[in-house]
Amino acid sequence: MDDDARPAARLTVLSGPSGVGKDSVIELIRARSPWIKLSVSATTRKKRDYETEGEHYHFVSRSDFQRLIDGGQLLEWAEFAGNLYGTPRAQVEGWISQGRPVLLKIDLQGARQVRATMPDAQLIFLAPPSVEELRRRLIGRGTDDEETIRRRLAHADEELAAEKEFDRTVVNDFVERAADELVGLLGSSFLTPAQAPEH
Image: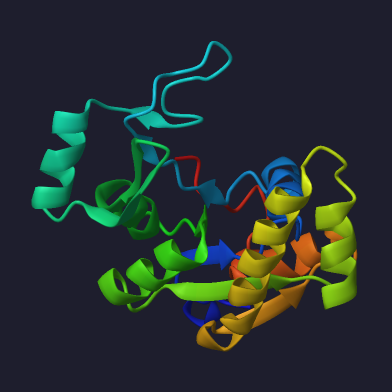
């Protein structure tokens, strides 16, 4: 396929219910397709010992984060457990301008914000093989009490109901197959590692 026929690089948002395997799919893509850029969130949370600045997160102060919000420099943001998290616009737009496909893993609310702030983004819903399988995974972790499981199942039902808001659905029946399908939707199936830009 010639250069003109390649899909233009763009942001792809990956979302789906808790327990569906988003992290497993992304880790496989990270290992197999290093030319795909994974968006790194900014956060006001304190850096943990094993974390690396710019790889796990961009660690910023609350005042700096507020400046990013006020300046319209975040594609989306939210607060969890007293800490702020958001996706820097400049980082994503910079990679796209270089022709690099960008993948962002985010929750449903964040995906809706990205739809509003970057309408050209592709939203992909990672779905379980069945609702029963998702429930089995959520219950089978064995680390949560009944109330936590109940809340998680209710939240999963809400997220599953939002599938129609997304452009495409990828079913995570097998991690390898789901990762390959997602890479294809990113447009990077037309790039070999040798062809892909270095930066």
